[in-house]
Length: 111
Image (cartoon, rainbow, N blue to C red; front, side, top):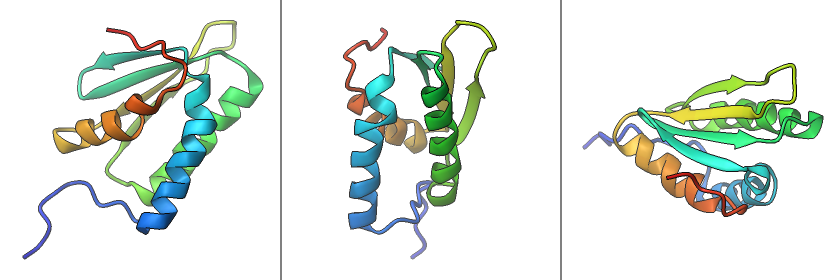
């Protein structure tokens, strides 16, 4: 029987664990705030060159292994925060919460 779940990560279990560990210690450690939005979450990061680079690398790599995720990135030209929106329907939203939002290390989750 075919898997009906929209979630079909292309990484093996060991590669996925390594990738999530890398994301936790890298990108997610810089997140200042997480805000629930329709179909997903908005992560806010300080607007620095390294954070902009990390967000773009994250999107590039995640598109290769998790094609079910939708991304929207806002990198403003001034001192306003970088916004990374991760969205998807149903199970995808739960995946985003479990894989990324619950692993934000800054402790600044929005309500």
